[in-house]
Amino acid sequence: MKPPDSLSRREIVAASAGAAMALSGLSARAQNIAPSDRIGLAFVGVGGRGTSAVNQALDLGTANIIAVCDVDSNAAERASQLVYKKTSKAPRTASDFRKLLDDKSIDAVMIATPHHWHSPIAAAAMKAGKDVYVEKPASHVFREGRILIETSARYNRIFQHGTQMRSSEVTAKARELLDGGVIGAVKMSKAWNQQKMTPPAPVADSAPPPGVDYDLWLGPAPARPFNPRRFNNSRNWGNTFEYGNGSIGNDGVHDLDMAHFGLAPQSHPVRIVAGGRNVDGGLDDYPDNMSVTYEFAGGKVLLYEERSWTQYGQYGVDSGNAFYGTDGFMVFSRRGWFQVYLGPKEEKGPSMKGGGGHPKHFADFIDSVKTRKPTIAPAEVAHKTCALVHLGAIAYRVGRVLHFDPATETFPKDPEANRLLTKQYRPPFAL
Ligand SMILES: NC(=O)c1ccc[n+]([C@@H]2O[C@H](COP(=O)([O-])OP(=O)(O)OC[C@H]3O[C@@H](n4cnc5c(N)ncnc54)[C@H](O)[C@@H]3O)[C@@H](O)[C@H]2O)c1
Image (cartoon, rainbow, N blue to C red):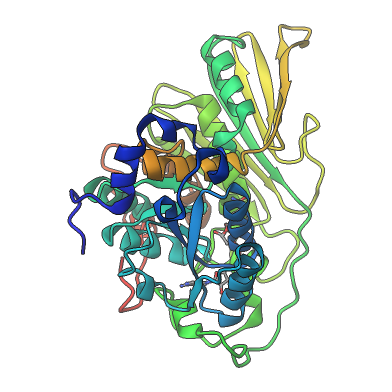
């Protein structure tokens, strides 16, 4: 294991490249980065999102893709071929991420596995001296978020959370206007997530597909027979307690992230109430019709609404936010626009149209790996956002009002709720 204070190749590169690196986000050609000085990247989990991240890295052109890793060797091979077609160099493939940790040419790891694997892989990579881009939600259970903060601090590792709207120019402009008091004091924010989901029909257990290391896919989750309905594609694994976080932690986490951004509370909520159920049936552990109310110390309130049975949203936004202030409100879409409405007549105020956060968010990560300045969504920011997912889900599971202490990150005198802040890890996959 590399001591936290030793200088890695990328840190030496950062020091020598100096201020010029502040320009990163420009292409490698523009920066004249010698191939030997580029960041060495590995991708762990190259299904839908992992593959699009490989494409983002190729488009950005400021990093060498050293390895692609997937427990499904077919996926790893596909990703390797994708890189080969664009660069004439095939990255190494692996099914077990642990085999990559000793590779000194890998500076940073992008993790896009199912959620139960995010934190164990991120923590192991950081302990091995690698920087990490971790897809949302970074933690599968609440406690993991705190461990990620401690690990990135202890090993001095760069951390980027895959909540890309943080990097949009629309978000930056919204921050400027909200801080300038465009809608007065913001006391409430709302996040809604709406998409038409059809529950897939149940299917019988079967043998895992050829080329898949299914035991490693399960990893820290309980041993179970293979079932396609719980396997790859987030529509399958995403709505199970064991591997996913429901819609609230899959797509809804983007909206919760921006609701938190707009409301800007100081800490975690102190009181959480959730309700809902699975109105469209199916086998999902999580509800498809759900609401959560989070109250913060001082009285700010954040509302979350989940409607996974319709594609029609509100204020003309499919999934997004409203920030409510004393003088008006801002409707914010993560498709990349906002509109302010002011006063009792809801007159139109400032607005902006721009982009979503991709690919700037990935470029921000690569930039931070080089310059060692924190990313726009480091582990602390990730934990505040993911906490909303976990606390909402716990409130739904216990079915009563919860009181949370942000200082100790526990539910005082509530062993049932406290148990759900963490989980059992199947040996040898402890965090
Ligand atoms: N930021 C975004 O906009 C965005 C969009 C889509 C998905 N995501 C996130 O990306 C992640 C992946 O989602 P997806 O839709 O690509 O899922 P997916 O099921 O298509 O892909 C997951 C891949 O991870 C592999 N995998 C599982 N365990 C592994 C392990 N231990 N080591 C290596 N590979 C492993 C699987 O074989 C599969 O190929 C999720 O966290 C999801 O929430 C983010």
